Each structure stands twice: as C-alpha cells, then as structure tokens.
Length: 114
Image (cartoon, rainbow, N blue to C red; front, side, top):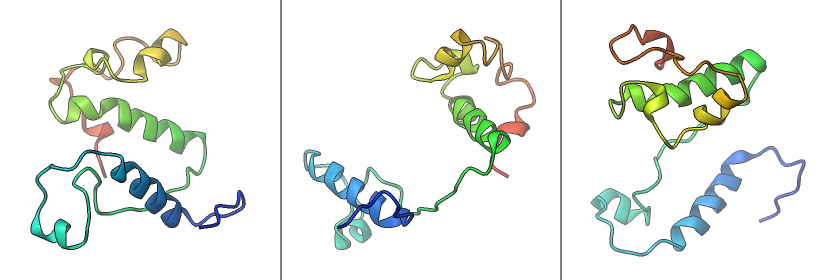
C-alpha cells in the first residue's frame, strides 16, 4: 500500500495500522461470532469516522472531551485524579488549572457528546 505524504485517505492508513498492531497481540481474547467471522480482533471499535480539526477552538473542544472522559465514565470523580492523562502535563504548562471541570457532582454536560 502506498502511503505517500500527500495521501489524505485515512481509512486505508488506519486499516493498515490496526492490522499490524493486531497481529502483534497474543491470541486468546473472547470475541463474538460476528467478529470472528470477519477476522476482527476485539480491541478495536468497529466504526470509524474521519474528523479534521477545523480550528483552535475545535481542537480545544476535543482535548477537553478527552480529558473529561474518565469522569464521564465514572472511573474518577475529578479530571486530576486520572493518572494516565495528558491533563497533568497541560497543568504544568499552565494551560489548565488543577481544578479544571470540578468534580463528578458538578454539572458536566458541557463535555459530553452532543
């Protein structure tokens, strides 16, 4: 597959990345009959959509969404409590305050999917 730098067709690129990564995983996870029939591994979500970030505001919205996801899904009560997040580096850089987005008891509607 030709992956020239000017190629904007993201679907084949992701298919190649997912294929190579999946082949490197040990076999043995439980998968549905539907996935088995299509030779799919369970690690990947099925749907894919390409979204080009339009501007700085769109980028900021996506970063906010990513940082808030552990709270949204009930893994932690505050964004700062999730240890695997780039949020901590962004706090050190002064981009976010440490108490950004409050906690799970606050109104979190601004960061959900619309």
